[in-house]
Image 1: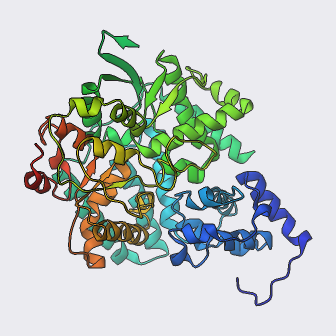
Image 2: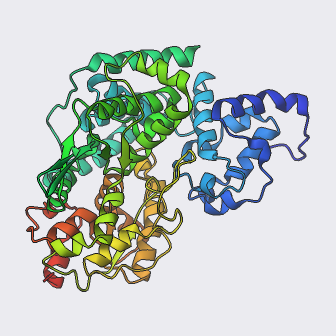
Image 3: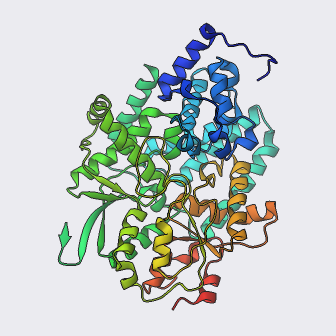
Length: 204
Length: 298
């Protein structure tokens, strides 16, 4: 947190606390900062912010810092924090909620590739009802390249990424782990309807 | 449903990975479980469970995508469904749990489905099935070879024992023993170690490679320090990640020795007399046939 002295102002914090609690279903007010979650978090060392710190930030109502937080994007959803929490708070669920909030607020993710990855995965699923690994990776890399060319490292970064992926792709082909057949479900219309409903749910 | 005296049918959800990059696991599951008297009936027209992507980004799809498969399984007339992939297993079980507690959501999803969720099907992981077959003595009975000298680090990963919802499983969450039980039934000597339920970062491998490589480095270092000569896993995400990226991890973190990453079905298959080719072990990235030759399971 950037400010040197934190002030707790309930009326300022309330909206964020309520929104996160309602959407994630997690009772963050039960957190008494025992830090068992911090001890188990596999990415805590890297992010600097552990689940207990994130919960504290939410309780202080620091919306901007909460949504621009590395833990939200680095979280590998291993559920260690939640399993060990004596008060049953599942911070991975909170991170899922915060990703959605930041998307709705049109905040550029701190790790844009993470967001692109999950979007591409769900798009591929919507096309065939099953994930087509090849299509999924192409969707992901195209989106990445577009962003790199616009905001990031330019052609050099794109070329490095492609080289890396091509190397993995070739080793997969060699080991017959690459799959070229198209697996498409028959009642795809049901999946399309579920996607439409998901969109309506998010909008409403 | 019992067919004759020997074979029982159970429903089977392979998931996308077992139909693609981990096709070998699909073949192994069918072959090995057939030896143990189970015929896997793949449910018709199943779809992707949404995996980590849906659960991280879309609360509705995270429940709705597995729900469609649950409805199809409920309509199959079978009472139990095997889901070998830990990710699919976790997401499907969580969806079933949420639906059992939320009739409004169930109705909302069911209106879009031709086969409605009824909440009948019992979901089993591959360990649920194998542990009972180890305890009943069937695994030892069907094994014609012993895995002497194999010291596996039994690697469970995150999603087999930990759930984002309150779901009870039969094994210990922090120090599960199911895989060890199966390995011991095959004559192997599983090691005791500290990273068996730690995350390998498979869902981050492509989008946040540094994190994933770091997580794997810790897992591999501990397994080596404890004297393991291979990993065993039940999760195709873990297998693929730990196998395909192990060269990169070892190079970056100065790890000298590499460890084959076996599916548990491979150890079973070899013990039952299948050849490594029938089990398709040659599709691993880290050489695994070398250890097989060295140990010569007999």
